[in-house]
Image 1 (tube, helix red, strand yellow):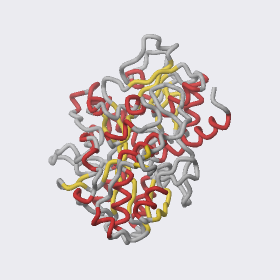
Image 2: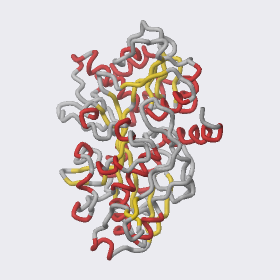
Image 3: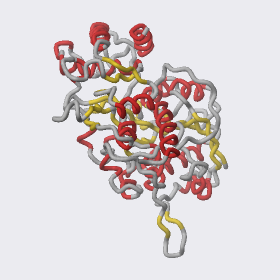
Image 4: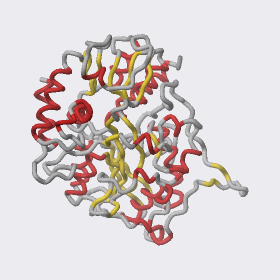
Length: 425
């Protein structure tokens, strides 16, 4: 059992992780330019790793090798500082232990000023102010930023780390526009099914436990309390009711959307918990009052370390998930320093530190050899592209159907929020 201090730190960090997943409909006040508690967890259901991220190797001359060479032209134009909107835990300066800001400043001369964002909505609003040079944004924010012209396309020749990014994260709808790259991928993760191994000794491989009932988990199912969860219902309907014609869980016409809402209404009879506080879900997994549910791997890791008898799986129907992107403001006062930061944070060593600290799969393929836990990339499926083929990354639903249909209008995300509020009233 970990010490109580470590447990408290991890519980705090679980709440921080919630923000980076795009729970956009929650309110929040201003955030301060402080850094977050570390995400001390790795693995599928192993105990959290409380070691520091791996230190960089030194050269024969005793100098540190950070495995990064910035673009010379961009470096020559560095302005001396950069102002960034970021998720907590993505920019660490040593206050909480790990430090990938100081070496960046030493190499580039760019000091880093951070404004923490608590939700994707807040990040969009901050970027719309024109006061920031760039942002780390989830997919449900990146598309709004691109559509609003708040961010601009990047020239890949200026980014020395881009070639090492996993191909599965490049040229996606949430980080490119009209064939042009609009940012640098940071990391990714899937929303997985967690289940109690005493209640289900033979394991589970389907989301049916969440939707169909008739199992020991009836009344003890844990549901993610967010409008984006409507996509999880749509994902189930892709298999359960193929006649609806859903091919993208974020692209729902009115009939498809209504079917998803009806399914969520019926799920109420199975649900014992709607969670937005991740510490509450972890506690319920430990005490056994939740027997199945949708979770993040990091939550399951902590619950397992506290004695929860659980396993996790990505069911055969696939899963929803997230992928974050670093983007350059179209009104950046310090564009060169922001480009340098984007290149640095996606370089092998820095990306390994940031994503292991937070608890997600890194985007840089070379970073997998630089994590303190040698199994981190295996546990978070960083190198297994087949794992991600049926993971539907969180995306902003729009009236223009994302699946390519032009003969119907799809339900926009604002209506998702309204419907969820009514559902949960």
